[in-house]
Length: 153
Image 1 (spheres, one colour):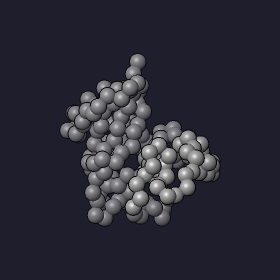
Image 2 (tube, rainbow, N blue to C red):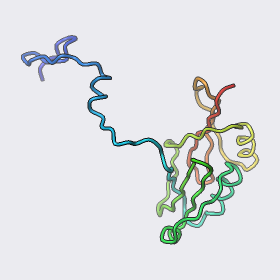
Image 3 (cartoon, rainbow, N blue to C red):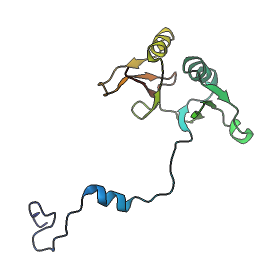
Image 4 (cartoon, rainbow, N blue to C red):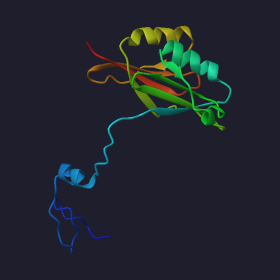
């Protein structure tokens, strides 16, 4: 492999390309298909634990259970929503919780949610501070990680 030429981005013996700002390059390469929102988030859960899902997502997070279409309802799981927040829990045969991947929820009263999780014996973990937010990770009854974020006052 030929050595890189310092500061020019080419290799010895090859023509040099002008360097473009990474922002110009990115803007030119990313198509605009009108993507503008997340309609819902899908999380996995083990079979037969819909009541545990209702207790956490309904009672702790304050989401309302939404009816699933009949074809999907036969698969198990549960859907929850409140305004533009929609969480779908789907049954996964060989379920493994998402211990790293997560969804981040903006909340108004993080302390009350944390206290309720504690009363229910649910795990929560502090992480590095994030400028402008008070935040914590909580784990649903199945072990999926969720980030709760409250704007700092």
